[in-house]
Image (cartoon, rainbow, N blue to C red; front, top):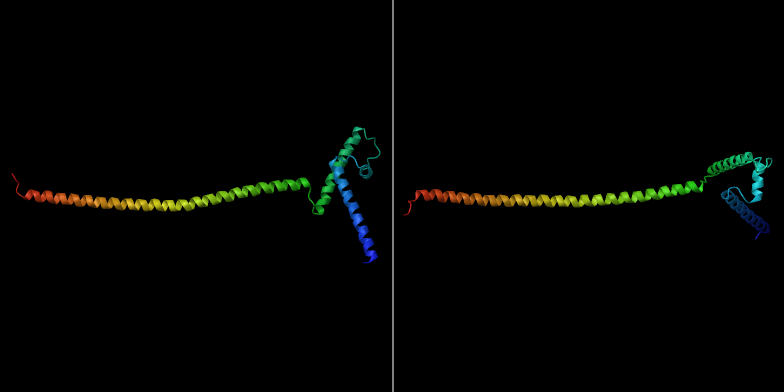
Length: 167
């Protein structure tokens, strides 16, 4: 292999590791409320003009708070340009996604239950209609038998009147 390539690649990986360590340090420094990591704190105070007033004065505390707020806002804007979103926003969206996913599953379950009920309800209605038709048919047959019996009785009764009465 080419010696120059190996040297370049080795230096590139070392610089990448240092860069990753700096990103990790910056993240930890911010999570600790901009405390610790004196090298970063010094760089921050210098960039925001906070090295002149004494740290114990109330004016310094207000200025420090304002500077850290502006820093966070600027960092979020910068990361937004790169397509990176804050972890809190990601977690909020993830939570919303999970809630919507659960709601969707419940709705699909409800829809399926309603479809099942409609399917069963239709066959149940059909059975009721068939049973009702059968009942009407039986009642017609029974009524017809009753009328036939009544007609036979009326015929016998009227033919019985014409016959001489037996004594």
